[in-house]
Image 1: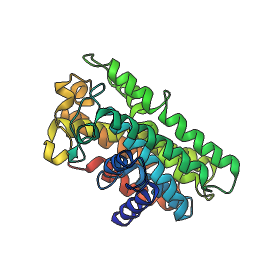
Image 2 (image 1 turned 90 degrees about the vertical axis):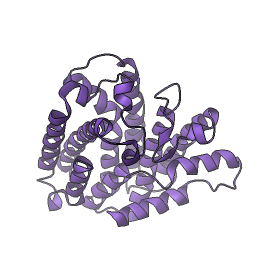
Image 3 (image 1 turned 120 degrees about the horizontal axis):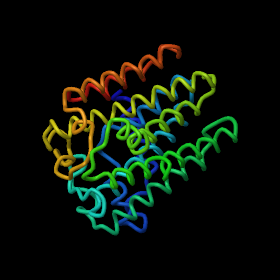
Length: 289
């Protein structure tokens, strides 16, 4: 896993504009936001799926960098005072604190655009129609029917009590959509998987995306700011509905394990029983438990 994380870091470093290129402040802020932090879960999932599909590593590099840029853009915007109003991310000041709010907005906008530029300017699939499908997948996962829509639901849900099915609906969009897209895009860089196997991969990513959010909710309630690299306990202070507020910590932990087991079962019929994706499922669910 460490080797893949190093590869992702190099791909991101190469893809981002150099800090001396004008506008220098914006490019410096983009690099500040993206480089040198984070678990890189979404790129790692893209690699795991791409390796199952026997994809060329260079193609997965591009997809992995693109999904991470979309993820970081969402974090930069989520941290703004108009959204979650946070001052710490990945163990350092958030972009709007280190630079300013206007620059943070432009960082998010620029990272989103760069992600789609990467998917469109390099050959990622042997079939042009498949590559157009990949661009569509990421666009849908990022927009109002995916990540952005999930964030809108989250903002509307402040101070409300949500049942578990309502939480699942919110997080299938807010967190799960980009995780599912990461797996789908990695798999589509190669040609070794059937449509049925791609469907099983989607089942895996749906379950592991929900598990990821359950774990995040538990860690927010049960870990320190130093451990998380972001402000701990923020959900409770902001009166946000979470799996912990709905179920309690222990039942939420149990749910995360159940979702992981469902995800792993979806891999049983795949080559090598899912290979690296099985390890990533444990990494996602067992971190800091």
